[in-house]
Image (cartoon, rainbow, N blue to C red; front, side, top):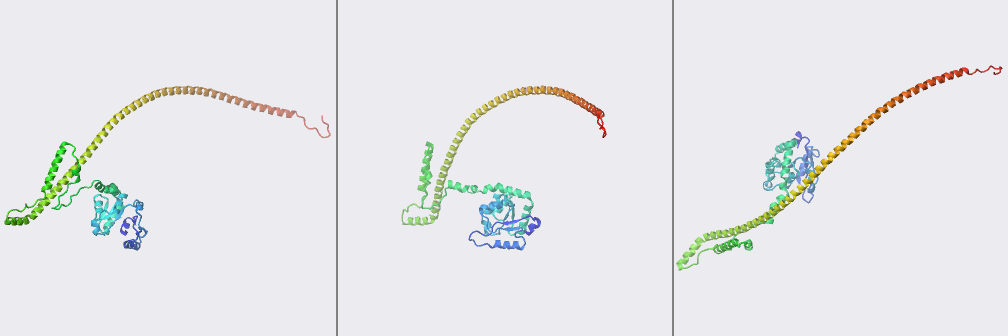
Length: 395
C-alpha cells in the first residue's frame, strides 16, 4: 500500500472479513495485518478493517461501492486442486475488475476472459503494478467490469445446476461389472416396449432370438470329459492350460451381451426421443395452422380497420374543407368589421378635434369674461364714495 499510495494517493484498501461471528478461534493474520497497517501509519487512513465479518446478505452493499476486487493467496495444495472460490463469483456478480493470484481456476478465467490481472503468489511488486494500472486507468476498469458482467450469468445457480438437474430428470444407465459366472439380465425397457407395427414385431422377434442365442452361448468351456484315462488326463491338463483363455473369452462374451443390452436400451430411448419429437412436430404444425388461420382473421381485421381509417380520413378531409370555408367567411367578416371600425375611428378623431377647438374657444371666452369682470370691478370701485370726516355729517 505505501508503494500504491505513492502513485495513487486516493486509493483505499478495505478488508471485509473481521472476527468470525461463530465459535471459530480468532485468526492471527488479520491481527498481524492490522498491526502492520498501524506501524505504517495507514490504519483508518488508507487501510480499513471491519471488526466483524460482513453478513452474507449485506455483502452487495460493500461490493457495489468498490472499484476493484482483490483475492490473494499463497501457493499450496488448495490452490492447485480447489474449484473456483465462491468469493470470486461475487466479483463477477458485482461487475468488478479482479486482481487474483495465479495458479487456480479463477486465475485462468481472469486471464482468458480479460477480467483483470493475475499476479504471482507473494510477489509484492507484481501486485503493486496491477493495482496501480487498474486504479489509474478508468477505461481499462470499465472494460474488465463489462467482461465480468457478461459471463456472470454462466455461474448462476440455474446454469450450474442444469447438468445435475438434467441427470436427475433422466439418469444415464451405466454398465455394471459382469461376473464370468453370472448371466447379465436385459434391461426392463426391452421387455416393456410393445411393438406397434408388423415390421416392428418382426424386428422384435429377431431381437429376442438373438438375445436367446447370446444368453445360451456366451458362457462356454471345455467339453465333457470322454474316452479313457489318458484322454481324460490330457483333457484336464489342456483345460488347466486353456482356463485363462476361456475366462478371458467369457469376460468378452459377457461384455458383448451387456453392450448389446445397452445398445438396445439406447435404441429404445432414441425411439422415445423421436416419438416425443414427432409429437412436438405435430403440435407445432397444429400451432402453425392455428397461426395461419389467425393470420387470415388478422388480415381481414387489418383490412377492415384500413377501410375505416380511410373513410375517417375522407370525412376529416371534407370537414377540413368546410372548416376552411367557415374560416374564410369569418376572416372576411372580421376584415369588414375592421374597416368599419377604422371609419368610425376616423370620424371619432374628427369629433375629438372639433371638441378640442370648442374647448379652446370656451377657454378664450372665459379669459375674456375674466377681463370684463375685472374691468367692472375696477369701475365699481371708482364709483364707491369715500368715508366722511369727523364732526361732519354724512351727506
